[in-house]
Structures are given as structure tokens and as C-alpha cells.
Length: 377
Image (cartoon, rainbow, N blue to C red; front, side):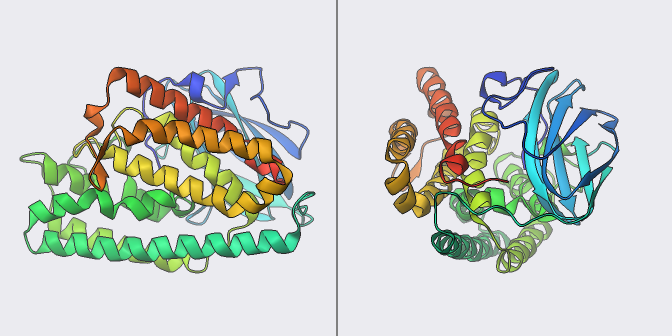
């Protein structure tokens, strides 16, 4: 989960000025609720809605970039991130009856409650893709996600073994590739907020670099690359391995429907466009391009699973998707270095501008994927 950071990327956000609506969003789908976000949390802090489709119209009245999350226990049901101050972002979701917790503005802000009453009809089947075909796609993606989570835990075990053996040169060489499975399934992994926070938080989520609550990849990364950085590498490494194994266990029973797949493909690339074009993700090691390439691969895997249906019902749209992926690939390939990539700092200003535009374009095309497949929240 990206930290809430002070930057304005309005041109890349699916958000609009207060009083407007995000282009392409259906505003007549489900119950509509207006929610204001600020440093003091959500207004209203208590929300009650009927089960089924819901449109949360989120306006950031705070002074920094904000976020909104819906949690069921530690599981993130849905979220909207990187909402610029003074802008509105509409979160279109679907909720079953029950009690939920909301995170408004930042993880440090007071939390709210969301009560969902009654029962809703099951999600409408796709109008254009056979239900049996969609079920097969779901099985294919669940298999992929579980394999990635298992592989990720195994890679973390090797990474941790190097740290515990005091072989920090090997640990540094393994860092980027150890993160690849995580980055390829990040939208699914982020649904477990506690594990996500423990594995992938950045320093901005905490009081500072020495905050004992800061754990995971990026705390370890800082210690490995920054001379004199504090922290017990052995303890942090053990914690990372425990959390990676926990994630693999949770993902092994996680059902993932076709709508979630389609939305996940776009949200993964949207996150890259909004928060990974500054080199701050892996800022200490400079290995951001490895993570970014894994994000692209994870999103493309979903598109490839849907490809047979897209070929039949939306060939022109599929051609746009392939062209948008190709635009990103062309730039990334310039920075290939053996089996990996050069440091993020090697990207020229011209290429960085082009890459930002390519990711924004890909995110825009992917935002139409669910609709093209006849899938709704």
C-alpha cells in the first residue's frame, strides 16, 4: 500500500474538482453516499447503507494526498488511494451485509464505521461472457496468484537465509528479485491490510526511520544500502519471512471473481502511474524498475487470461490494450541489464516523461476492461 505523500498528480488521477464527477464512472449505479476526508477522519464517521452496489463520493478536504479504505477485520474489501486535496474520487463498490471499518485520509486518522443492512442479489452475470468461461478464468487466476505467493515466500526464505548468515552482498543481490512475486499480485496482497502494512510500508507511514513499528522490505532495504542505518536485521528478516508465509497461507483460500480480476489489472497499473514514477518505492537500492516490470507482468497476466473472450467480443479494444502495453515495454526495454534492469536513476528525463505518459495511457485503457467484459460491481 503506498504511503500518503505530498505530491499532486492530478493529471494521472481518476478524480475531479469538487462538484464534478470522474469521467467514465456510472453515477446511477447503487446507493450514493458523499464522504469528506480530512485529518480528523471521515465526515460522516458513521455510515449506514443497504447491501449491494454503492458509490462513495470521496472528497479530500485535507491538506495532503489522502486515501479511503473499507475493511472487514484485517481484510481490505475496497479502497481509493492518492486522492488529491480539493478533489473528488468516486469509489464504486459492492458490499454484503455486515459491519465494516473505514480508514479515512490516512492510517493515523480516526477510523469510521460502515454498517451494511439487508441482503443484496448476487452480482449480475456478465452480459457478454458465459458464466462457465468466467469461472475458468477465475480458476486460472487463482492458480497464478497462489503460485506467486508460494514462490514469493520461498524467495523470501532464501533472502532471509543470506541475511542471517551475514552474507549481505548476496542479500543485496537478491533483494529486487525477491520482491517480484509480491509486486505481480500486489492488488490481491493489499486486501490483507495487516500483512501489507508489515511487508511493504514505506517510512512515510511512520514517525521516522527509527520507528520500531516500521518493518518489511523497505526497512531492510534501507539497512542494506544506507551506511549506519539502524535496525536489527535478523529480527526484521524473521518477521518478513513470517509475514510472507502468512500471506501465502491466506491467499491459498482467497476466491477471486472476474470483476475483481478486471479491476485489479487496472488498479495495479494506476498505482504505478500515480506513485512509482518518482523512484521512491525502492529509493535506497534504486531497483524500482524491477518492481515496476513485475507490476506490468501481473497486469498483463490478467489480460492474457481474458484474451480469448476479448478476441471474440472486443478485438479493437484488445488491440488498444496491446498497443498500450507495448508503449510501456518499449521504454522499459531500453533499461534492461542482463536479467534485470538498470537503476531508476539511469532513466533520462525524456524517457521518464514518456514512461509516465505510457503508464497513464495504459491505466486509462485498462479502466475499461471490466465494462468491455460486461462485468459490474
